[in-house]
Image (tube, rainbow, N blue to C red; front, side, top):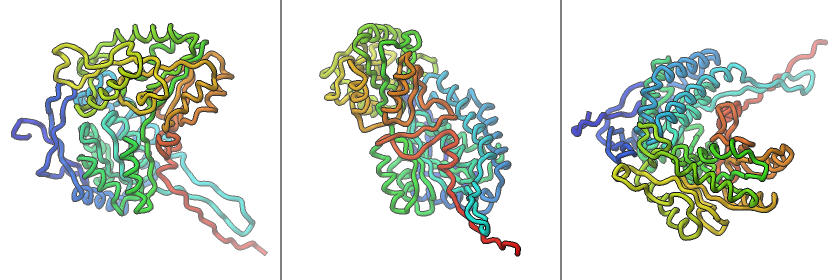
Length: 485
């Protein structure tokens, strides 16, 4: 406990809490007040964590069987469910999101460990038919030590998304959570120890990206890096890893379009379109932030969306409002800067600023905002805002809709709303994105569905069975055999 009475959370290295003299205050986004302190790790702590992971890999974890790793992953899933309420409370205090969303995040995190517990027992190599005197086959082997740098928007869920396949595949891990939302990652480190994960297999080093994150990305004894965050930081992570010839998985955000055709189902589409941009106050890499609407249904859809936007309840996540605050003052200023341009360039239908009232004076709140008549000339059309801002544009033809959808450097996800399966299939083939949802829009879409971006949304694939292949390398073995005479 600090002198100010704040709980202090140290790094977890080799199964132990590591003392430190440097701390970072963790703020509750709903009121901007500190409620905890977390260790401010740097290169020294990262070095210790990588050393611990390497020792655990070489001495214990690489020699475990898939069945043994599967059993540990199942126990981790059970441990997460056993602390569901407390983990959700921490996640909401950390991030500001509504408590019901945090409860879902805990459920999904547990599901990741369940999924990879099942999948790892089926992962194997292949035999290769070559010639009678040679037996050739492939093996799937873990990389060794993996570094994981995760963001603040879905800290527990993304930690599980990246750690579960890595651990199931036989890797040891060093996790660097975001300084704005580190608490559930540190609690996860305690839970995995209780589930039987050997000390050092998972190490958690909170701190600033420029200190702990940069040291982890550049470390010469890390065999693989996974990063989720901004494109600018992703470029730096990739450059650092490249100096050590280390492969990376990068998930770098998006400006995802939803295409609405005249034959769309309004009853189904409207609530999902709103949720796709207001879930966690739009702080979602695959948020459906651009709405491309056929001109014949534009006015009626905008009116329906406006009504729903106005009805949203904004408030502290712990009260389970429809939408909570943004993560920080910095993020709020960034979003408000975009909105200032949006008010000048486009038509503000709903929102556009900070909600009025004393209840919103201290926290990092922004109104859910509906911008209409946005064109590719506008910055809000092209740049990721990472806030509750939906940009609406009209189109007349399918070719025009595709051109609008493609008018961005990102390619993470897209939605298509139509009753015509032929049109949906044609559009899905034309859009350069990693995920396409038809008559549905679900951020990332579920544990089983591979998730990765095109273009500047990143490289590599997370989730689904593809993630196990990402966290293993392929080794070929060819054995000369004697042919009987």
